[in-house]
Structure formats: structure tokens, C-alpha cells
Image (cartoon, rainbow, N blue to C red; front, top):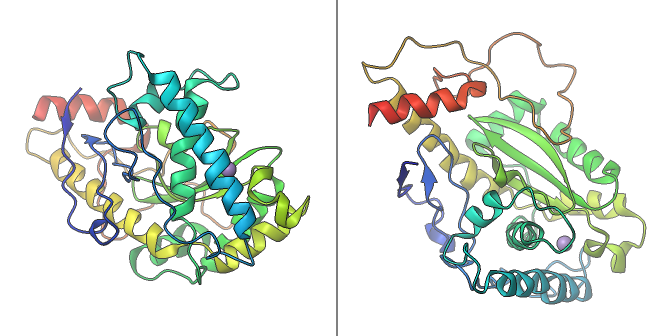
Length: 307
Ligand code: MN
């Protein structure tokens, strides 16, 4: 498999988080500070335990971060001691163990470590304000506006059955909502990049809201979601899509294929809004895609021949 160091300009520099290594044709996911391999580190909370109060109390954050998140990390590092994957990056551990979904499995602990580190970054005091720029344009195109997207995030978080996560993801420049059960995570799917997530496990809200998950979801979306963080990731994603597009349009490449939206997720995903046209090809702002999203393996083969 061809690998390269993903040299993105600056979007993560201000936060000290560099993009992770990405395969050619595969968007990088943000490096959240776990370190290069096991034993992985617990990234510090990006704010104080009281910073998200009263929406999320210090007591909830203390249990959630210091007990649940730290517990997953402790279990993961113990399981990786002497394990053949002990020298691999966290994302590789997640992708290579994704069939192991039994409780307490290596996959569950690895995925929950990454999911929680990402979730903390998705929240910020004074958040919830609509983004600007290319993410705003993409939200308008794919959801019909920020308010419509916020409503769909709340609905997805409220209606998801049992434990799991709600995600806003990007793929080939397009946005979609995804729900995952238990520890499952979009980053195990090559090509899909999460921009924001909401933890809908009971431990995320029960101390503050008991069974009222909708109250937690509404307040979190209205006042805590970190849209500038999502916009940074989306910008990096678009830049990589454009670089891959440039590689695909070298003279030896075959004729451009029609643009298609991303393939449907294998997990339960939110249905596309009824207002979207069914058949019309869509082009992301500033992007000219020549490879359909559902021929990714063919894309990899073609890239391999070009290099
Ligand atoms: Mn959690």
C-alpha cells in the first residue's frame, strides 16, 4: 500500500494537531494527540471541567473523561501490550480490528478512545454558531441550510436507539449524517472523514438530563458544537480531494467519468432530504471530480499505475 506524509498547509497548526498520515486517495483524519503507537496517551481536555457548564456539568465531564475515556485507554494499552499491533497507529488498530465487536474487544476500546478524543474537540464554550466559508456552502448545498442541518442532528441524536454516536461526515467533498452503534466509528471506512460528533451514550448526559436525551441534544447543538473545528477539517479534506483529483487527471489517466454523490453508508444513515434532486450529478464548490465515489478501488489501482 502506498503511503505518504500528508502535508496540509496550516489548518491544524494553531491547535497543535497535525493531520495523520493518509493513503493516496484517502482523506487523512485529524491526529488528536494519542501518540504514534501504543502505549497511547490520553489527550488533555481542551478546556476545564467546568467550561461546558451548565449544558454539560463538571460532574458529567469528570466521570466521562476521567473514568470512561481514561478507562477505554487503559484497557486498550493493556490489550496491546505484547500484541502484534503494538507498534501501529491508533487508526490502523481501529481499521484492522473492525470485525471484533464483542464487548471489551480491542476494536471497541480503540474506537472509543478515538471517538471520545474527537468528541471533546467537537465541543467548545460559546459554540453553536453557524460556520462560514466552504463548509457553509456545502451545508447549504447538501442540507438546505444550517438550521435544517441542526434540526437533523438533533433528530438523529434523539432518535438513535441505545448507545452510539451521531456524526457529520465528509466524503469526496460532500456532507452526510451518519449514526453508529456502540463504539463504531466512521474513520474505519476509508474515504469518510468525520467533521463533528455527538456522543449519545447515556453516560454523556444522564447525570445532567436523566432520560431526557433530546434536551441534551438540543442544548449541545445550540450552544456547544465547535463549527470552526469542523470547518478546519473540511478545508483539509477539500484540499486532499483536489490533490487526488490532480493526480487522476495526468495525461495517462483514462477519460473522465461522470460525477456521482458518495455511495450510501453501510451503517444506518440519515435519509437524504426529500428536497434533493434524485439523479442530477452534483459538483462540490471549486471541485471537479473525475472519479465516481463508488469506484474507489479502481481509483487506487489507477493511482498506483501513475506513481
Ligand atoms: Mn462517551
